[in-house]
Length: 128
Image (cartoon, rainbow, N blue to C red; front, side):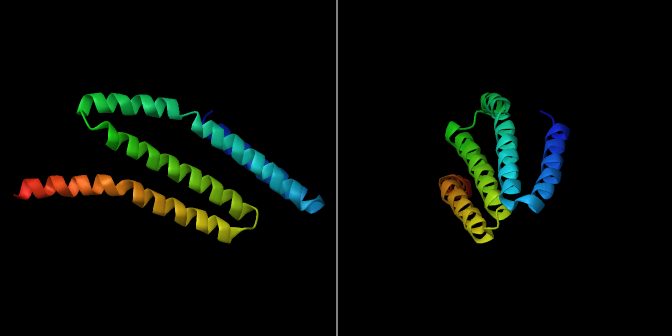
């Protein structure tokens, strides 16, 4: 789906959810959660083309596959953490959403440390 189609789905869902909040508030939340899941899986379907492009880049530049996989994992962590945090915030549980975001950021930092150490090691060898 295109960005325009996904945007239209989002706008229509919000308009319907606002209408449903007047009748029964939880129906609006359920509708919004369903739309978010739909949009999430549409976004996840783009991963195949991203992985294909990443493999082609790896072949061209000859970078270590560990670095490329780390980059993809970091992207996945970001996507999932933002998705979960957004749902929590929309449901009125902003503090849980904030904690999910913080955990996602800490996970990204932990995952990127080996890459950072390898970079510093390479710089150290260049300086010597």
